[in-house]
Length: 236
Image 1 (cartoon, rainbow, N blue to C red):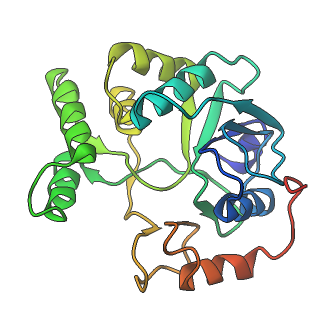
Image 2 (cartoon, rainbow, N blue to C red):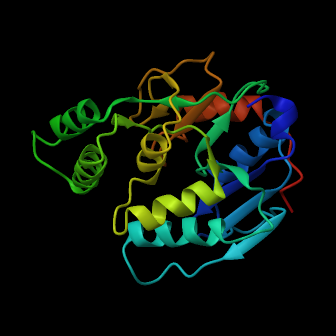
């Protein structure tokens, strides 16, 4: 999607309740500077001093984290004030360069992603890989090509197509992967940009970067903060 089209598209963040969120603050600075958009919506909680264009407060208590996210997806789908096509952000996504075209990207074949993930846990399943395996089976049963869309980069969704996914796969939670495969959005294979560990190398020329709470204070965070020193319109 070209930048002229993105100007008519809303950005949606899912955010946990907290009093402060420096990653979100800098993510919004990067969006204002580098990502054409119409409005910014935050679903969930909103830290002190952050003022999105629209805020939908959602209780952070009860249910599992997967169910909370699925509920927020459903509420976004049913909100006719949000553009029909919207871009989903996490609070730790950063747009490092002016975006001219939002490409569709996937990570790798889904089974390959699962194997690599479980290798980190001594070849044992974990909560995340279990959900990915469920998605693999559900999509495979439909005879679909199965790639992982679990990348830490902004992703374009259509509200109506997303609502179809929520209905077609009740109880499943890897929404990016279910959406990307079911609707055959294709895309270009890309390495993940998330910096998980202190000291991990990262591409300083990448359009997108993502951090962990543990890595944002370090080298990658220093690099991001150096690029976005000015406050954004989203900061009170």
